[in-house]
Amino acid sequence: MKKQFITLLLIIWATTVVAQNKVIINADSAKTIISKHIYGHFAEHISRVIYDGIYIGENNPEIPNTNGVRNDVIEALKKLNIPNLRWPGGCFADTYHWKDAIGPKSERKAIENLSWGNYREDNSFGTHEFLNLCELLGAEPYLAVNMNSGSVQEAVEWVQYVNHPNGTSYLTDLREKYGRDKPWKVKYWGIGNESWDCGGHMNVEHYINLYKQFATAMTDYFNSKKLFRIAVGPGFPDYNWTEKIMKDIPARRFEGLSIHHYAVNWDHKSSSYEFNDDEYFMIMEKAWFMEEFIIKNSEVMDKYDPKKRVALIVDEWGGWYDPDPRGNGALYQQNTMRDAMIAGITLNIFNNHADRVRMANLAQTVNALQSVILTIDEKMILTPTYHVMEMYKVHQDALLAPVTVMSNDFVRGDKKLQAVSVSASKDQSGKMHISLTNIDNHNDQKVEIALKGFAAKKISGRILTSKNIQDHNNFDNPEKIAPKAFDDASLSGDKIHLTIPANSVVVLELEK
Ligand code: AHR
Image 1 (cartoon, rainbow, N blue to C red):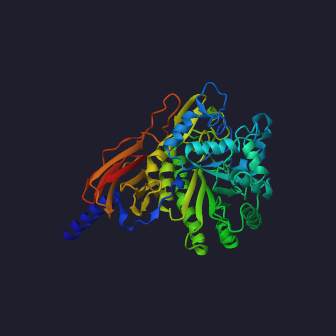
Image 2: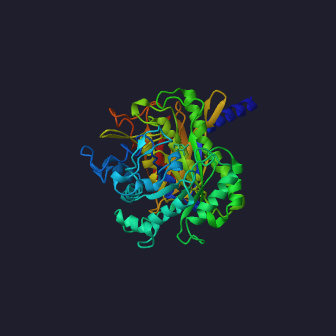
Image 3: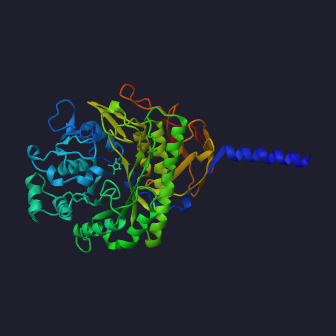
């Protein structure tokens, strides 16, 4: 009888433990800054990303703009504290010739966009327009150099044109002639893009040799111009590529290594807003893979660079589905609560690996893939992903508080994933923020958080949620999904208790 009673107690205990997710926040061992650059964006010349989505031309009488860039988009991106913007591609960058897109617009060379739909690209948005936009946004530009159809000389001249002081060459004279006297001082330079695919189908040995030529010529021997040069890393689990780069490119020739990972099922992309639970689960599996991809690349990097000098840069990430023809664009897709889940867990992964991941770029800013903004003519909407980026911006340049998470499983058939994802940080004013995402679209999750090394006195929060995982904002109902106050977290001593509703993102703020 006694034995049965103990067994019963054990079962009750086990059920309680399983039912409640447990999180420990180790604020006492915080030592890494989460770079704000993890919250970066990417805008490529694809259909309506640049034209329509960002740039509508200086003479557009219908849509309010600044130098041809939509004011509504500028305002929305500023509210995200957008730290950097990658441009002009992507695959587009792999055939881009920057000189075609400077000078008087009527004299610019129109080209065919070979990567995205073979439409005529009039090059009216070029280097000046992009770099001036970055200034307006307060964002660092991140330029992707064409190392496929472009030459080393072209890259060298681009650096001089945008970065060197007046009077140093015919290039800076030209820059002045075209309306810009002082240099923009671009720090971030990607050398190549997906060189194993649209960037030239190179093998890693070929890429490395070419990279060394570009990286050496673009700056001087000691890199006194302080360019931050980013080498192409893998876009799939090819850790041999990472290994060779780390081994064969001399340390003084590169500062960052980029990887790409999309939450996509290449064999069956399916609709961006009409999908079933199996399709949802599969995308969540792909999204969680980001963590393994970062860990395995970091392990290789640690072998050659234990002091973590080289930054790991995830300069393309996001959900990728079938294009939505209503958006009239090559990669236009709707953005649902599913995308909010991708953003919630991915940004937590980046934060938690901030010792190595020091920049990332969500693909793509407006009207393609996992966009934060969608536009149609003069209308603009903010997507659930926008709201997650906005809620998480509290982590930008904050001190990472390491977390231990014991999560329930999100189960589909015989497969399971971690349901609850968490990251936490302490900002410069001393506030702690904890971001939690529950990807389980059917079950709420009870969470107990134990705080170590932070004596909180006050708690508040915000939540992004909606009944169905397919829910989204559209041009008729633009505010269906927006963050709301979340008052359901209770603080008692060093413990916080809350229930995160199914498919929700919560950000808590704690004050001493
Ligand atoms: O973001 C869309 C495309 O995805 C980019 O052009 C390319 O780099 C990647 O394959």
